[in-house]
Image (tube, rainbow, N blue to C red; front, side, top):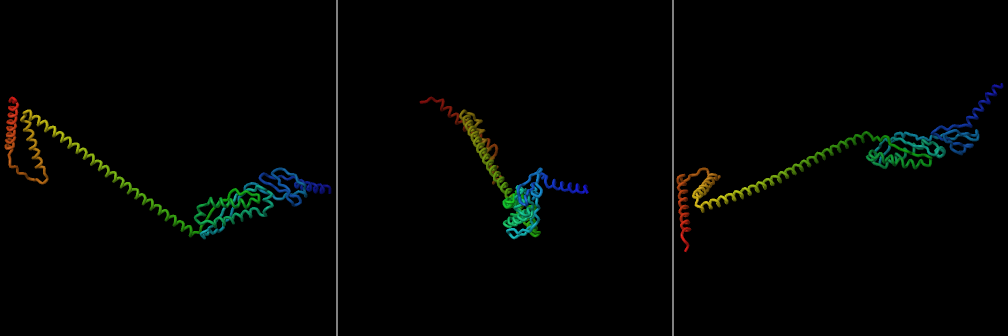
Length: 312
C-alpha cells in the first residue's frame, strides 16, 4: 500500500514539474496565459510557471516559413483565362499578434494572396502578365505585406511560379512569334540589300571621281607635253634661224626637208586618205632643196656685199 502511494506521489510531482518548468526551443516563441488571458511572451530558454495559474497559450514559429499557393484560374484584362500558382515567404515578428489577431494564420495568408493574384492579373493584359513577372511580384508583395502587418507578420517575398495560358493561346502565340521572326528576317534582308546598293553606288561614285581625276591628270600631262614640244620646236626654229643668219646652208636644207617630211606624214596618216599619187620625184625634191640652197647663198652674198660697202 505504501508503494502505491509513493508511485502516485511520484507521478504528481512529475506532472507538477512538467507544468512548472518549461523550455522554449530556439526559433520559437510561446505565449503565456493567466486563467486564459494573454499576459506575456516566452522567448527561447528556461521558464518557470505556476501550475493552474499559468498556462502555455500558442506556440509560434518565428523562423521564415513558406506557403505554396495552389493553381487557380485567372481572367486577364483581355478576357484570357490562365492558370497561376505561386509561393509566399513570410516571417512572424510579433508572436502575440500572430496568435490572437487572426484565427488561422496560414489559411488567412493563403486566401489573401490568391485574392490579390486575381486582382493584379485581372488588371493586366495577357502579354503584360507573361512579360512583367517582376511587376506582378512587387505589387503582390506590397499589398499583402500591408494587409498582414496588423497580424505581426512580415512578407519577405511573393513569387509567381507559373502562368499557363490555354493551349489554343499558346499555339496562337507560337504562330505570332514565328511571323514576327520572319518579319524581322525580311527587314534585315532588305536592310542588307539596301546597304549593298548604297555601297555599290558609293563605289561607282568613287570610281567616276577617280576616272575624272585620271582624265584631268592626263589632260594636264598632255598639255604640258604639247607645251614642251612647242618650246622645243620654237627653240629648234630659233637655232635654224641663227644658223641661216650665220651662213650655214645645211641648216636650211635640214629645216626644209623636215617640214616636207612632216607634211608627207600628215597626208599619209589622214583617216580619209588610203592611196596617194604624188606628182613629184625624189630628185625633184632634192632639186628643189638645191634651188632653195642657191637662193639662200645669193641672199647671203648680197648681205655680205652690203655690209662691206662703206656707208655714205
